[in-house]
Image (cartoon, rainbow, N blue to C red; front, side, top):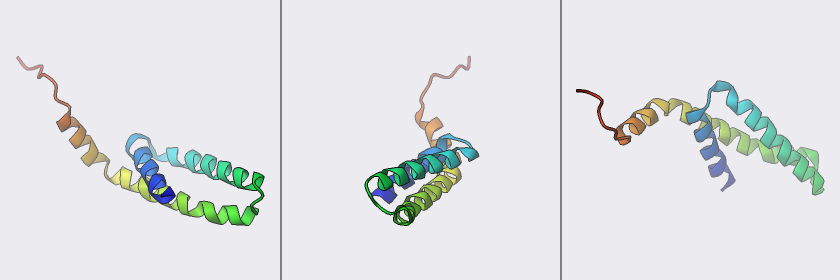
Amino acid sequence: MLPILACGAGIYVGLHFNILALLPLSVLGAGAYIVSAWANGQGLLDSIAVVLLPILTVQVGYFLGLTGRPAYLNLRSRLNIRHSERV
């Protein structure tokens, strides 16, 4: 379930933010998980190994979001029904 959520978060970041948005997100998320695991008594190397899968799936989702951005914008513009300002 965690890889699916991480991929979804990566897709959201890829669709809505620029290229350097993923680095702080990955560093903060990995740091929070490692500190939490360390506080619970888990070993440092074990927690680093566990955090690699979510970071990789966030990267995959981010690139999916970047490549799907034009199609997403076209779909959003088609579903946004507004009155035409033509005379």
